[in-house]
Length: 90
Image 1 (cartoon, helix red, strand yellow):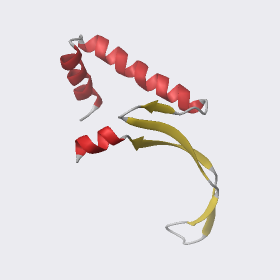
Image 2: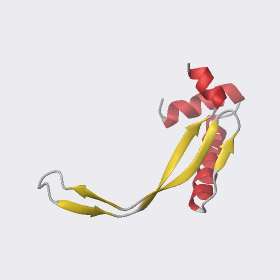
Image 3: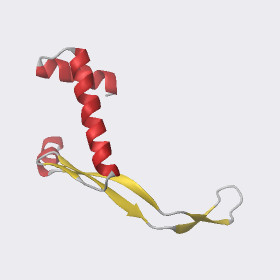
Image 4: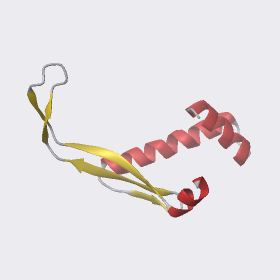
């Protein structure tokens, strides 16, 4: 499912216009992004939680030359599914 299909599904389920559904989805994404940028996690009980994890600096190999390279530390977003979501999928 892509974003357009998701917007269409939200509009149908919530009895909203596609324009309002798109606004709601974009606001949801923006709020999650801002929260993660500020270092906070977002927990949606039953659905899952979004959080930022820190990936430590490490050494890797350049795939073409095989030489060692340094990979900088970075922050990565992660999602952990909640129990209700896990049960629904299984």
